[in-house]
Amino acid sequence: DGAEHVRIQPVRYRRSVVDLPQADHVIAVASTKGGVGKTTVSVALARALSTRGLDVGLFDADIYGPNVPHLLDVDGPILANEHGQPVPLDADGIQVLSPGAAGGEPPTARRGSIAYGAVENLLAQGDWDEMDVLLVDLPAGSDDVVGAALEHVPLDGAVFVTTPFDASVDDTARSVALFSENGVPPVAAVVNMSRFTCECCGEPNTLFADPVDLDVPVVHELPFDRRLQRDPGRAGNTEAIDALAESVEAFLADLGGEVPDGAFDLRDLPPASQARQLADDLAAAGPGETVSAVVEDGAWLEEALRDGAAGLVDDVSHVHLGTAGVLLELSRA
Image 1 (cartoon, one colour):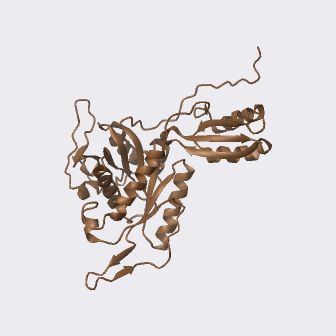
Image 2 (tube, one colour):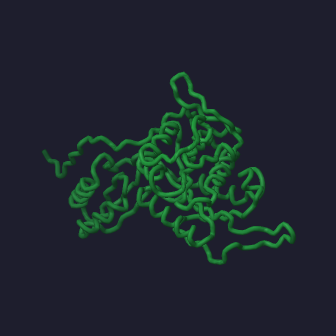
Image 3 (cartoon, one colour):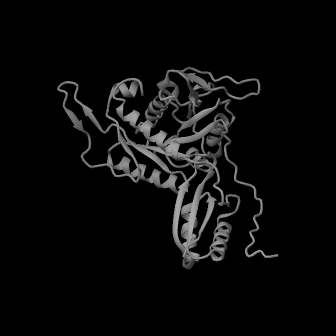
């Protein structure tokens, strides 16, 4: 009696994800384009974050060309504990798991669920210690491992890597859009091999004249430096890597994770049901009042509400909550 508005929220089975309770946050290093230096950046970033005092893990998800062990100079095979879990290798305090150190047969032409299963077996079953951040070095492309990782791994954000070449920039821009569409925000971009300094005369040279335009909040530039390629994060120019580590730390510091008081948790509902619930809540609210909800895909819901309940929506804000999702705040018209 006296109730003006009732919410009925069924309990639904949430989609299957890789459970990584040992990691406070998970950051992907990605690019659709191959050969741009994702692994070099992953290793250098892992070392920089570790040097800054964070507990860091690095997972090599590239089953087609796993180069993390080579760049970190760690040898397998990866051993299992008494529970059969693969135990990460130690690289100067960085926890490392890679198909390249797992032993057995070399990589084959695995595709689809078989390809992702090979990755998930290591990632999800790994005997990880507690970590502030786990970096996931993804393979090039947008299918198989990358697509499954977007669907199943609780990614908080992504660092994108490109070279200045226009085709590489275009492909990386597609990666940014793909990750954003799947609710994974960009942390920063790295323009690798952007310039080089002549070893004979010391003259700096820009490899490509066109500026790099990516829809990413922070763009860092790394020079073409063979010392950096051989030993990422230890030799050569590290200023840009240090700056990248600062950008990642700032991103992690801004992440929440808890559902705020007063916000509805709609993540267990299908998207269409989420839209209907929010439309009902807005209809019951007074002009100028705010309705808050935590959802997986804030952009889709905003578009759905503006199409289906345009007269009720005044302003919309999105706040990324890390693995918790997106806090959508809707102001009633």
